[in-house]
Image (cartoon, rainbow, N blue to C red; front, side):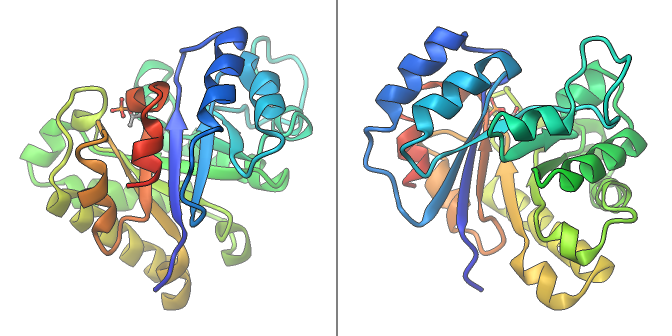
Length: 248
Ligand code: PEP
């Protein structure tokens, strides 16, 4: 199955408006693999700088969160409509940092995925187990539950616009990349889960990424695995040589 390679940078809370412009003006001069979709998920305050800097390229801009309500008295929150009007095309939903630091539940994540889809934003749906869940041998069941809850009530037509990122929590920001086999096995499990929820053919098409300490050394072997279609990359996407990962 020929799925497009997808490499997404998650900047988290890094880079100011000015730093965004100068980083991306330089980044876009790299010779990037034309067969890869490249997306930068930037802080809200960097969106306009990113959209401007990338307007003459195929590189897309994503956000890192949204709120599931339409509008109203939700101080500090940002809606799907606001993002969409700013030129945002993707949005990370359910990142483990939001689940653990900001108490986002599976139910909240499901509502956010639905709201993003309503505004034609492509959700980058994150899932991942803790080290203790892996040590107890419950990682596969846990991930299947996360995926089923996040996709609850979402039609196949809508689900086509979702990208799934498997990010084991023990690998994020730790320098401990999962082995190629660990990452592949879980991405295959996720693909099979999507096939069960929808149809076989769709499960073959959905883009599934690995994330967790991907770097210029580990990317190419990970991306060669059959069920891994690219990566969600945190700290390494803040460096000039992120292009090496895109081209891996
Ligand atoms: C992430 O937070 O999505 C991530 C994968 O981070 P890192 O690459 O820094 O582990």
